[in-house]
Amino acid sequence: MPTQSALPPDAWTSAALLLTRWIARGERIDLLLETLPRELTGPARAQCQHRVLGVIRHHGRLEAALGRLVAHAPRHEVRAVLLLAGLELLEAAAAAEADPGRIPRIVHHAVERTKGLASQAEARMVNAVVRRLAEPLAQPAPPADASAAVLAEYFSHPVWLVQAWQAQFGPAATRSLLEWNQTPAPVHGRWRGPGEPPPFLQPTTWPGFLRVPSGHWAEVEPLLAAGQLYLQDPSTRLPVELLAPQTGETLLDLCAAPGGKSLLIADQMTAGRLVALDQPGTRLERLKENLSRTRGVDVALVQADLLGQPALVLREHRLPESYDGVLLDVPCSNTGVMRHRVDVKWRLQPGDFRKHPAQQLSLLHAAARLVRPGGRLVYSTCSIDAEENEHVVRAFLAGKAGGPFSLERSVVSQPWVAGHDGGGAFLLRKA
Image (cartoon, rainbow, N blue to C red; front, side, top):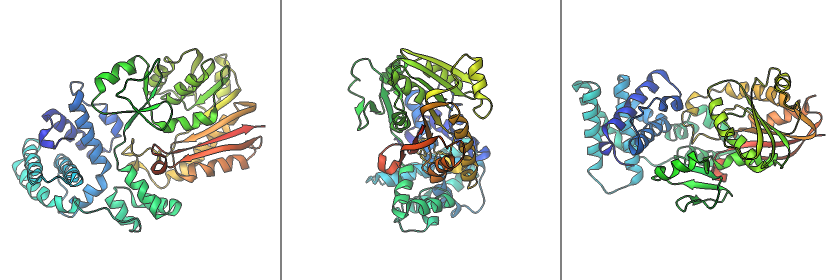
C-alpha cells in the first residue's frame, strides 16, 4: 500500500473521521464502513478501508506504544491521526526498505493533517510523539513461550483471550493463531460458471474456489452481477460438504442470512426444494438476493424465530415441517474469522463463552425437531473454541432431544493449519 502522503486527501480524511467515530463510540466497523461517501470509489476507497482496518487490527499494540509516550489522552481526532501514523510506521518496519526518508515523510504528513483536523499546538505534540513512535513499533515479534501479556500487546488481542487459547491450543499454536489473525485476509470467490473462469482468478487447493487478486475490480464486478462469481471464503464449504445435498431432496437452512451457504447448497442440489429461514432484519435483503441467483431449485424464504414456533410458521407457508437435511449455522463468537472481522476481538467478553453455548444448545434443540427420521442435521459455527463446538454437541447428545441422534462426522478447521477461516461442523444422523 502507498504511504499516507501518497493517499488522496479524501481517502485519508475519511479514514481519520471513521476512526474518530470508532474511538468515541465503538461502533461496529462493518456498519461504519457502509457510511463512507459514495463518491469515494476505486483505489481511494480501498486505501481508506485498508487504513481503517489496519488500525483496528493493530489497535492494542499501537495504543500501548502511544500510552508510553503521551501523558494525557489527546482528543479523539488527534488520537486517530496518531493511530494512522502508527500504522504507517508498522508497515514501514515490516517492509524493511532502505528508505531513510520514509519515516520523516510519515511524521510530516501526520503533522500537516493535524493542523487541518485540530490545532497548531496539537500538531507540535503529534510531531514529537510520532518521531519517537518508530522505534518501539520496529521491535521484533516475541517467541511462542512469551507471557500472555507480551503476546497480547504485540499481536493486539485481549489478554484473557490469549490465556484461554494458550490453555486450549498450547503456546506454539496460539502464537500461530495470533499471527494469522494479524494478516489481512485475501479475497476468495466461488466460480459458478458457465465456462472456465478468467485467467486473472487464481486457482486454490479447494475445488471451485479461486483467489481474487487486487487491482481487478473492474473485471470482477460484472462477474458478480452476472452470478458467475460469488465472493466466499473456502471455509464455508465444510458444513455443506457434511450436509452433502442430493438432487431432489428437501433441505432446510436455518439462521440462513446472508445466504452464502444457501446458495452453495442450491448449486450442489441442482434440483429439489430449499427453504431458508432466519429472523426478520436487514440481513434478509442479502439472503433474498442470494436466493434469487439459484438455478433449478425450488427455493422459499421464511422469516421466523427458530426459538419460537418455526413448525407453525412453516405450516402457514404450506412448507414441510420435517426435512431430509437441516443446516444450522449458529450465531457465535466468530473466533475463527477474525481476519475478516477485525473488531470482533475488541467486542468479545469472557462471559460470551457462557452466553453463546447456552443459546446454541437451545437452537440445536429447536433444529432437531425439524429433521425427519433418518435425516441429517449439521451443526455449524464460525468459532474455533471447544465451548461452542464439541461441548455444545456433547451436551445435545446427552439430553433427551439428542437421544435419536448420533454423531457421524465432524471437522474443526483451525485457520493457521487450514489456510482459510476457522470453524466447526458436526454431522448428526437421526435414527
